[in-house]
Amino acid sequence: DGGITQSPKYLFRKEGQNVTLSCEQNLNHDAMYWYRQDPGQGLRLIYYSQIVNDFQKGDIAEGYSVSREKKESFPLTVTSAQKNPTAFYLCASSVPRQGTNSPLHFGNGTRLTVT
Amino acid sequence: AQKITQTQPGMFVQEKEAVTLDCTYDTSDPSYGLFWYKQPSSGEMIFLIYQGSYDQQNATEGRYSLNFQKARKSANLVISASQLGDSAMYFCAMREVSHSGTYKYIFGTGTRLKVLA
Image (tube, rainbow over all chains, first blue to last red; front, side):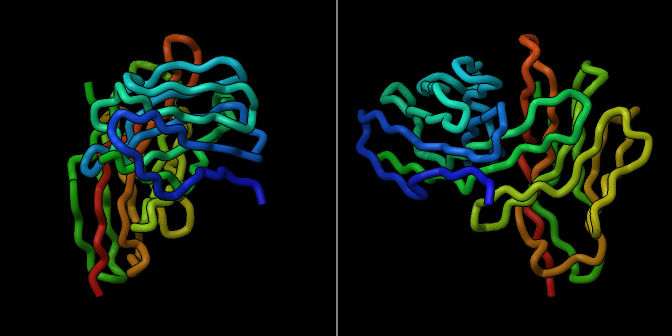
């Protein structure tokens, strides 16, 4: 079955360490997205990519970095510069066609805890 | 500026009754899409329903319908015959074209629905 895989489900890190969250999709979608979810704040867009080797900053990109070397993969690195990294991170993908119903398909998320 | 507004942090509904979850949006783009997602306590995001800005009729998917009022910029989700399994967080989202020509999806803060037996 096609889908989006995020690993691991739970991740624990010490403050000051960079950590990379994995996101892999086999839906053949061109566009991929990273969101951060905090209680009471909904989903906030971190980075997104419409095609390989290209990506754009979302609303809260500071302290994060991404790469898009393959269509299937869009890893997110949470750097030590991110002041409040503890959150639930969701990866999503879509088919970026104008005028069509193209909902986001989500992975099951990674819950990152930094202490 | 908030582009998607969900003013109801929490809602209660009696089992088998209908409930409306509010969503207002703000965009200057004539072409946009509106989506509703359900997030159970497990954390997964489940796509429920879609409404395009040019759609003439309100979208329906089973027990879900979208009350789309374009002039008011509202896209309320109506759940009919509520079930205990409908208890979850519900998010309204809008797809818009960014200034670079790429697509972004913006989410509201969500409404937590609790269905009472």
